[in-house]
Amino acid sequence: MKVRRRPAFLIGSVAALLLGALGGAWLWLSATSTVEVLAARSTMPRGSLISAADLVTVRIGVDPAVHAIPADQAPALVGKRAALDISAGGLVTPEVVADQVMPPKGMTMVGLLLGNGLLPASPLQAGDRVRIVQAPSTPDQATATPAAIAATVVAVARTSDGQAALVDVLVPSQDAAGLASQAAASKVALVLDSRER
Image (cartoon, rainbow, N blue to C red; front, side, top):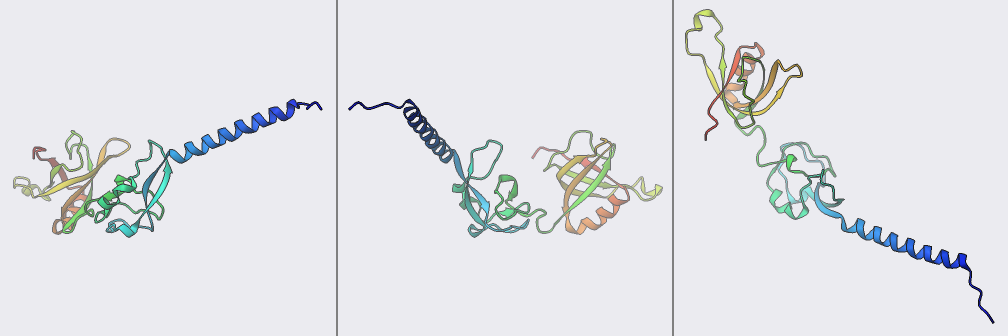
């Protein structure tokens, strides 16, 4: 008896084999192109101390735009602080982790809105040491040496029209209220001290 070959059956079998091979290759590639990174087990408020119990390992696809901290670096994060609020399940990135709380104990962050001419034309950088000079209140005080408060720049942002800058500075807590009051009355200027350490 002669066996009849069915071309449709043969083509279907080859197609099924090819689809199976392609599916297996896709599964293998998707499984091997993931990495283990750290995420927050529960919501961590800004400033909270990070413990091992706060972290969980998750697998994500490799993406060069995502800068999550690898899971094997979890021990290095224990004892650091959350620099920003981290939602439960949120990836832990270098930007959301800090060595200390900002502002640190004994210091206060004050925002200054300074128009052009009240700060250097050279761009300020985070970490710059500056002095906030208080303008004299009366004309007869103009000849006296003005009061100045030492500060450290935390952040700088130019206004959209480029006519002013918002500068966040760290100052000793006892100087913060007076400085904020002077700044609100537009009676301060900022001077940049040497960047040489």
